[in-house]
Length: 315
Image (cartoon, rainbow, N blue to C red; front, top):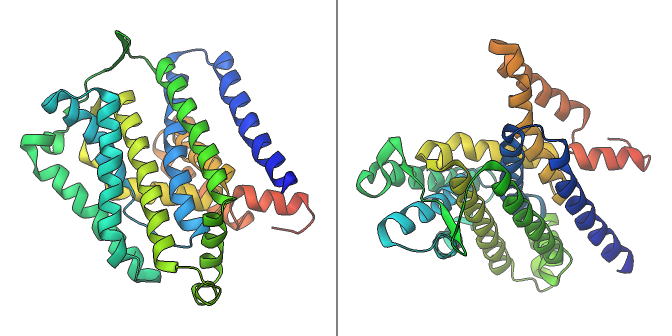
């Protein structure tokens, strides 16, 4: 246990050190913006990895919860005059409540049936955000009022990089503590075998629902941060199907069951498209080839495969 704690805090301190020193190498606000997006998507990917990598439940509609968080800060501030932080917490509560209400029937499904059900949930949220134009601005989206703290209006990619970095470190700490808690051990038991978990007294339905709610809250907070960073949101940009696929790809590419893997997967999926723009019309082709090569050469995901090779266990 002492070794686990040391490794856990080593990861947190290492991440905090990297996030604190990276800005020293950023020559412009563009790099701050890309890095802030990495932090935000990493936060959402960590929540989804708790669901997929530890509890073994697939979700293809997780961007819907990001959409709830994004529109909560936009609608809460512009329509109801809520402070941005209050609106963000309200969005997280709404996302958690929705996950709790729909999770009980949905999580009874398994395999591709569960994937299709979560896909339907994500599409439903996206459709509501698109069609309720009076509240959300419809397909064109809506502006997000700037967040103010202590009389200061928070703006600029550099400011939101630091805020998102702090949120990511906090999200990592909470995730690692959860993984090493009795809840985390129950999640791993469910992932290995639901039948065996029931035999040893694990309430499978309750734990699956709990982690589904937690992952939804992670996604909602990430969506709120992305809305504040961009200053404008659209249904497709926050809650679209392709966004959900992107989150799943981040988790699988970085490594299922690895918090660090979720961060690495998010970094790859955010940075690579930016770096490949120099190839113009071939950037999507090259991105696809890089992802395919990564999964072929590192089939467990980047981090678990590299760790296995370092330990001499192969990929």
